Amino acid sequence: MALIVQKYGGTSVATLERIRNVAARALATQKQGNDVVVIVSAMSGETNRLLGLAREISETPSAREVDALAATGEQVSAALTALTIQALGGKSRSLLGHQVRITTDSAFTKARIKGIEGSKICRTLEQGEIAVVAGFQGVDEAGNITTLGRGGSDTTAVAIAAAIGADACEIYTDVEGVYTTDPNVCPSARKIPRISYEEMLELASLGAKVLQIRSVEIAMKYGVKVHVRSSFSDAPGTWVVGEEKSLEDITVAGIAYDKGDVRVQIRSIPVRPGVVASIFGALARENIAVDMIIQGTPTPTDDGLRTSITFTMPQSELAAAKPIIERTAAEVDAKGVTYDEDVVKVSIVGLGMRSHAGIAAKMFDLLAKEGINIQAISTSEIKVSCLIASKYLELAVRALHDGFELDKAGRKGE
Image (cartoon, rainbow, N blue to C red):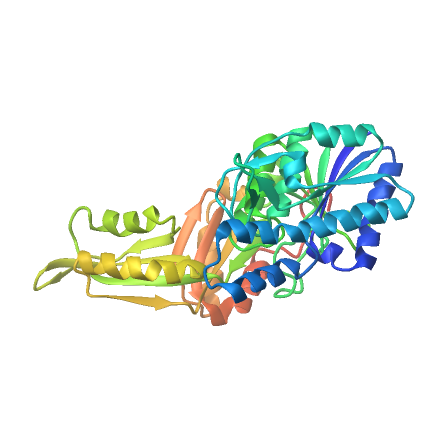
């Protein structure tokens, strides 16, 4: 007997017919002798509908009330899923975040889990019932309903799997696993049978939408084995696991892209100590993340050495960041600020990059051969990211995918 956590996303519970499919799958897993915990998202489009209603009432609605509203989407799908399991002859009980006691901080709309009381789930399983838990939600220490941010049901599932010691956490979605890149952009993209936590974390942070970043962080911290699968197929998916020697044999595991960045350039900044710190310190105090920072070569001018600073940041935070950037630029006597939203970040990721030299150089060469100019570069131990003009996105992804031969099998299980 195994203890299995199954998470179903919005597309998997979008209609009553699809909820029946979820219920049948959960029952089949239970009949194999397993204890089953099901985590559900809101029905597809429901969260957007609810948030839209809040915005019709107010342009700046109370975050506390927004969470109370948004959490009802998962309450509906949890109850419907439990009812459907019962209608198919099974035993089931739905549980909300405050009933499980998923305790979070009070950062409404983007709360972080502080602890999970798994005893109610365990009692439900001991009674032969399938526990159906509403994802995405929790409760703070004052009893307020909180939500975990977009993709938060993934985080709920992995955190519960860690809390109750599950043997596996199955993440069911509308794709059959993690692919070497987006199949919609590159038709030769291939499903990866096994990928490390580190690689998945990088891919998630760089734009891959299969798993929410925090869910991967929790899985890595607690060693939760995650199986990304399709709810519309019985085919094996992708296992997200700890490092294995076979995973290091391939230099590049996948290619990600992110169209959500903006390139910011602060021009003609005086070269003196503390200027750069004041610019990025002002953004940090407002919790605005930046990436790909590049400082230009100092140039002599009539009023001393000056340089430029270029960095990227999420487009979603630009409205909040603009006043801060322009105020700080004026304070340090910069000569202007420009913004470019017509950019995309393309990245290669792989454990094998640690022990194979020349991977970055090969990436730059592949892009150069396609006439693609690189505007900025950032690296980590297992990834290289390049900022390019957005019109070259598909060309760049395909060139890199072909150049690193990602269409060919090579990892364990292939």
